[in-house]
Image 1 (tube, helix red, strand yellow):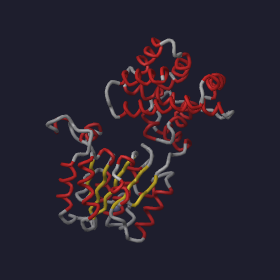
Image 2 (cartoon, protein in one colour):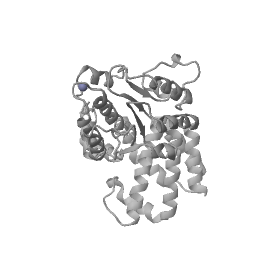
Image 3 (cartoon, helix red, strand yellow):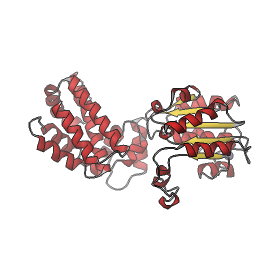
Image 4 (tube, rainbow, N blue to C red):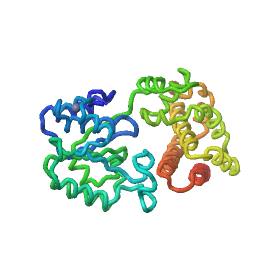
Length: 343
Ligand SMILES: [Zn+2]
């Protein structure tokens, strides 16, 4: 996967190819943008360009070196990510760690990396380090990394990949050249969904999921079309809730929170729904849930724009807590409804 094959990210890719073209690549980069839009793919292509001997500064994408980068076993390309992520991606087994695999990138990992970087590259003209989920670095790890950014080892290029760059120290961010990745066009996601399609994904559903994925291919691929079939039910159940009937919120939390996947899908559905209601409040007609436009108009009249915005914020908070696995899914949803309907 050479850099030139990364789709719909012209802005970021042109920044990278310009730097490579000048053969003057800054020693630290921050690839930032939403989850699932190609940052890691681009980082792989960038690393290939830096170690490929066949097409130096470009990366052919197919030689032995490029292949080893893509397979993550090139000796001069180091991937850094939390232990828990290594387990989730099947790169390590749970038994490889004596304690519960950490969700943070810890200072020990940064120190081991620094040790490794004190040696020369083994084969390639550069050593490349790719921090996957860079914002998972905890404070001590970030402070330790700062030293490497301030006094970079020779021929070393660090790439910090992050969908939440505001969790990185300002002093880290300011030392990085930036490559900004944006949401992918819905048409591109739709095409990819169909290419990867399992049975039962008709055009209308593919389109709906593409629009709802808000430009994230990984999110679109992770969305279960079956949970999406629940879209209408989820929205209708939400709109029936009233401040007086607490038992109804709690039972909706129970339905939505059956498991993490269904909770995330339901939250996605409600996020798009709130956006539709906000659009209906200003009289716009191009709703994503176009089949529910009448309900959107009713909801728009019932809730003030300020309250709607507050609810959207609570939804976002619950979503973050659930994806970061902070506590029980159902409790997070219950708390969200309580705050939506009592405050
Ligand atoms: Zn190559």
